[in-house]
Length: 410
Ligand SMILES: Cc1ncc(COP(=O)(O)O)c(C=O)c1O
Image (cartoon, rainbow, N blue to C red; front, side, top):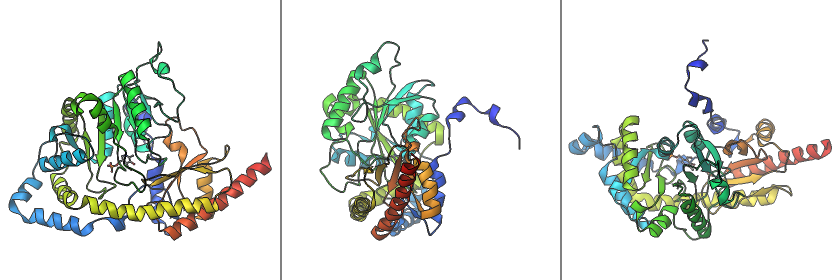
């Protein structure tokens, strides 16, 4: 095999295979109970509605001529018009000119990295944060620093002190964060906006799980709050990334960015250079399905996932030994577990797969510095409640063995 390493650009050294992608392969083994992949349950996909929409569009000569042709990079106008109304209902007054359709919100994160980061720039993320975002941003060779907030002890001064490079932007998931499942309260959102204003820091708000709230009151998005403060979306420095992947289906790859018009215009140039536009056929299908069904589809998902979230929390309460801490998310797909110091999530995973046929994601993957190895992420989206209980029971029994062995060794 020839050696390619010296031919690659420096950014390639920051690209690592995702642990999650590797672990997804485990989902194919039928005896494994997997809490690993944070993906939707395919039983909830609106298969027939999607099939009918494809048929309707492709069966109509005029619609199909549009659907199958090249198109503008901004995205299919009726979908952007509908999204402008949708965002308006979330408290964000905007127009289609404030919206770019992306190939899933993952592409939005890549574009945001391309837009803001030059090699060596500082940027702020939560500690832990979404692994896919770390991967997307890493290509642009930033230095990751901790976003101010509840879990960080950083003072404002530490970002602005002499010699400290001004961070270029902060990436934040205010709703049901991946991987912790936790959300920012209204007061925390307001404080974050205050800090961002002090630092003149653009914020990128990832709202992937926005539709999956099971309890509690909806809290306005950072973009809604910032636009209210600034007197409109065109005057504020928050970019909002949305997606249909968690509320309808991921496979059509439809996400969107909402931001001030000048930012959207720059992002449109990136879209053009990258892949011209999202498949118009898929945008038209998503427009039909979302405009007719998003609320009842999401309500059904919430009903199913809420029961699974409840089952997971009940199983954790029932089976986990003392000293194990876990989050109690109001929505989303994840519970975050903190193990005793000295227990390594990756080692525990190996043992759980071999001895317990149960899988999850070791938490270190979600930290920009790969720290906090005594954490794990559990996803409840794919398993029925009875299976969840069985999986947590197996995980807890192996964890108890590990803890006993650690005490014994000490
Ligand atoms: C927080 C978060 N953002 C973005 C994405 C990417 O989603 P998509 O590209 O399917 O819209 C995911 C996927 O799991 C996610 O968890």
